[in-house]
Image (cartoon, rainbow, N blue to C red; front, side):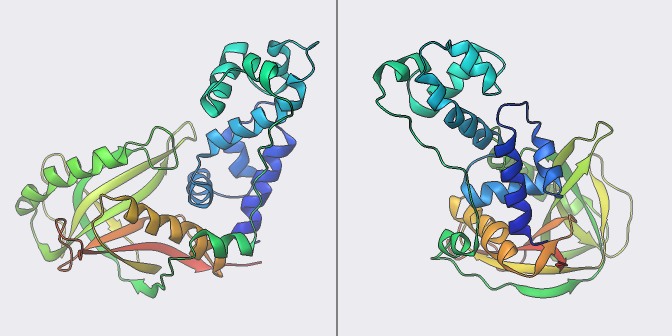
Length: 297
């Protein structure tokens, strides 16, 4: 099954369960995908987090009920999958700028917030001004040493990656000289998803450099091995601390990945910072690569 069909399965599952509690992990499970990758692709497709989409759809589903003044707002809230009058009102007000009771008084007809539907036409229009052709190649195995932190990616409303990564690189680069046997000239950002004992998926980012052989690991650092793997590598020109870089990654996870015959292996994504990288220049080049394998129907 292609990615775009899997994503649509998740959307259909949400639609069928708007009046019930919907654990977000159950959406990705129904789509047969990794939870983090489902959320990442969904955000790339819609520029909306999965959590906010479910909230919006529940509110949209409640609109007609608000016109029935014999039903209390609490009753509408509970039947729409919200836990309380207060949580429903907060979500409603955040979406529209006024409360459900104000909407009930002023609206002449229900607003329509449509269910998302993805097809090839949607993908073609999504990034119509951006067309990146990746280099498909096999990465040789690497030993990497660096500093690894947990981050919250842009697929969440609570993302902190824009604040965390500059601090990480600023603290790591002066310490590269502490690492033995480095292969100079290139550094890497390794993005991994790890599952804890509770089954929760966490996002980690490692600022690192390759070594020819593993020596003593400096304090506060760790080592990792990058296995030989096929990658699709995309060239990004421009600074990385901008929305432009996020748009490049969103293109990879939406238009390219969903339109290709490839699928993400759930292995680590790799950012490559080589001689062409200059964080102060608009002509700076960084490469972003995703691990891939052929998609099977």
